[in-house]
Length: 318
Image 1: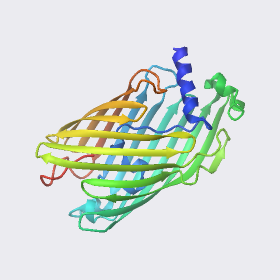
Image 2: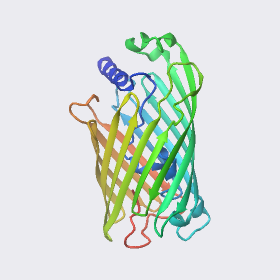
Image 3: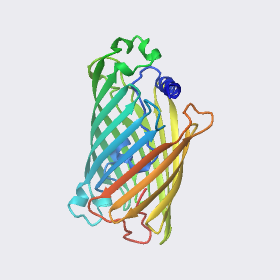
Image 4: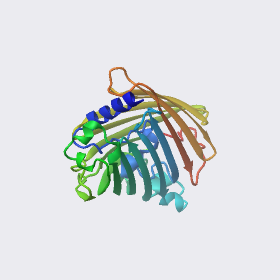
């Protein structure tokens, strides 16, 4: 166990380079959490409460565990608009995330706001902004030998330290009932507003592009495809794809791939206002990831509408 724990932490050091607390938040079902990555997509699926639990390399000490909960409110839906996705103008969301990895525990509170302008009979231009507050805790008792010898964080060996970061996110998106294209930036200020112990230098902005397409093939079959590209200083660029088949509007199966890193299989069910999904992700041979699977559970609850088509061409999930 200690051997695997050491290997995992060595991998963590490799991918975080300049700052040990800069972990990326991976979500295999990223298409179900668009608004977290880009505030412009807040409320794109209406008023929804959703969350996920992601457990990487279970049983290995210090392995990443992520917990997420959010609530989106579409004011057009709240006001009873006939077609709130197209005619509504504003949406708001609150997002809570906890990420545990190695000696670090990060808690994040993010509040997003999106406004949209109808630019054609079926298209909206969405603009969004958000404010995030991150509290990062370093357990100096859990540092590896390499971390303890690092001049930046080694001084906190044997103690508990805290760092608070305030930053903002921005984004824009072109949306349609069946497709979208978006661009967003997390931590646009580079994490310069910090308070507390200085065990990391800045928090580089991350640029993200998301796109998706969905189409009903028949009354009992539909498909969705989504792509996600991310780039950030000191970390490799990441490209992800996933494809899902939705059958009888009640269950789906899918495949996903994070280039050079991992592949996943997906399954889920829809019933009433509830959507539940499961992902099993396994690393690619030759990647730096440890052997063993990653489990991810997702859940989403529609506050006002049911998981039912309003017309034969509608697709009820991404």
